[in-house]
Amino acid sequence: MKFQRIAGLLEKLAPKSLAESWDNPGIQVGNPQQEIKRILVCLDVSQPVVETAIERGVDLIVSHHPVMLFKGLLNIRTDLYDGRLLQQLLSKNIAVYSAHTNLDIAQGGCNDILAGLCGLERVEGFVPVQGENEDFMGRIGYVGESVTVVEFAKKLCASLNTSHVRLVKGGPDTVHKVALCSGAGAEFISQAAFKGADLYITGDLKYHEAQQGVKQGINIIDAGHFATEFPMVKSLAEYLRKELADIRSDVEVIEDSLSQDFFQVIRREGE
Ligand SMILES: [Zn+2]
Image (cartoon, rainbow, N blue to C red):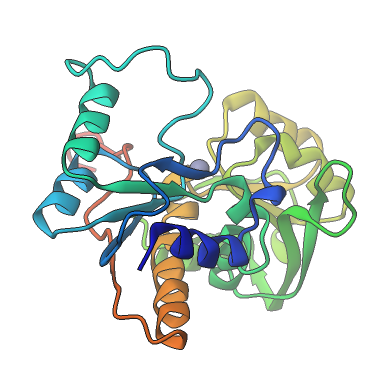
């Protein structure tokens, strides 16, 4: 199947028009006309992911984080990480497609996946995307039965398959209304408090952002950028398999199961 047609299936779920203005979703590497037989879905196009793609005869990598972002392409130094990655991809004719903030905002995208894993009910959009009233970054909803924030945090570790989360106990003991933003969403702490959430879940939280939660009387769980986003790999792979089956395509979809969070927790001796 042509790369272009698979890009079309991805854009049906996450239209590029939903993306933030600074973002760079869509085709990163390759030719829209090239033939694709096997797809690998991942969070980041890392060296191990590219090696897996080469080993397993993958023609297309679909990632959440774009390969090229922020700086623009100023050089391709093949002695450095990014340049070597591009060299490997091009020499093996492996295409790359990324769905980033458009997948965060999309119905059924990263934030809906996270809301599902948090067991939220009556889920609605959280922060309206600029200039739009129907598209939202993050989600806000309710937990079914009253639970303490510590119990909630423990359950979240299990459902996100992570060893730990960090809790900022700035709000009430029990949790009812929960706001969330997958990845890095510390900028929305005030909105979460303003909307009456007892708990805000995101990743990449800094010290003074945690302090802001305490001052505004809201609990915050930093579940990690990786842990809040990695579940998209399985969901997006399942979406692609279903769409491809519907059009009787035999393109194979595999998932990156090897990638792990960059952060590891090292405890003091004897603890
Ligand atoms: Zn991210």
